Amino acid sequence: MKLPIRIFLLSVVLAAAGCDSNGAKTATEEPVVPVIATKVKRGNIVSFIYTTGTIFPKQESMISPKTSGRIEKLYVDEGDQVKKGQPLVELEQERLRIVVKEAKASLKEAQAQLKNLEATLKRSQKLFEEGVVDSQRFDDVTTERDLAKARVQRARATLERAQQDLKDSVITAPFDGFIVEKMMNEGEMATTMPPSNIFHLVDTSRVKIECGITEEKKMSIIVGKEVLIELDAYPDEVFTGKITTVNPKVDPHSRTFKIKIEIPNPDFRLESGMFARIRIIERESKNALLISQRVIINGEAVKKVFVVENGRAAEKLITTGIINHPIVEVTEGLKEGDIVVTEGFYALKDGIKVTIKELSDQGASSREPA
Image (cartoon, rainbow, N blue to C red; front, side):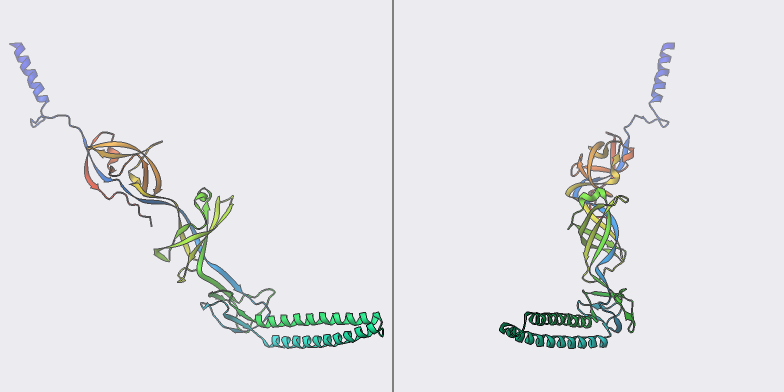
């Protein structure tokens, strides 16, 4: 009788071990990890070189006189737009007109003396040929005639200089632009030495930016390349310009080289002194496979992501190309349409069962960052 009782008690214990407190049967079930995922899609992506700079006018000039004189008239003021050749300043001209008259009189006198000596030389030559005048006398007359020619040339040069001074007493604009500063007033004395700056003229129909680029990016910088410019003054706009100069010398201290960028400015919205943020396209890939940078798990030597295949997590090693945060180009390891885990992947391991709480088919955005 003891043996059947023991068998009965053992069966009761085993039955109890297979039931929970409510008498329900339990079994070891495979864990399921809920995740959020998205489909890999294609798009365009670019990477940029970033730098900053300050806007300068394409050209500028300090307007100063070519001849000294008292300022008689200022035709423009600060803020005025001027055209090339437009009068800006007129210096006192009366004294210069007198100098021109004196120079004309001196030239006329020198020409009369030359005419008289040429006539004398002509007579002397005839008398010399007839033997009436000796060679010494003939040579003297010839020398006097040559000196008279030189005096005419000097008098003509003096007149031309006086006329040029009179012309230069009216200072004109050397190019189209804006008067941004007036530094002298009517009645003041303007001199050539030292030069007196009367106006500051700038041409902003095109503006330029000088900025530094790190030496490792030099291979991506070429003359004529388009750049994108953003300004604090116009936060919702992106302006375009082109690289016009690349300085081949690298600064040994900053390890950068200088470039110049020109930007069209037909409406004069861009002004000298504005701070500019610059983006230069370094690399570009069209119709590339794109994913979000945050889904990538970086190992010591590899990069990987988790994709969902047949309801399970599959670990995929990937190779990346262009990175334009937060978007990354995938060159190897994925294909279009793959479902990549975007949230919850830190709880995954290769082969574990997953359930997708949310699936987006929009993929990673390849839009340029602001």
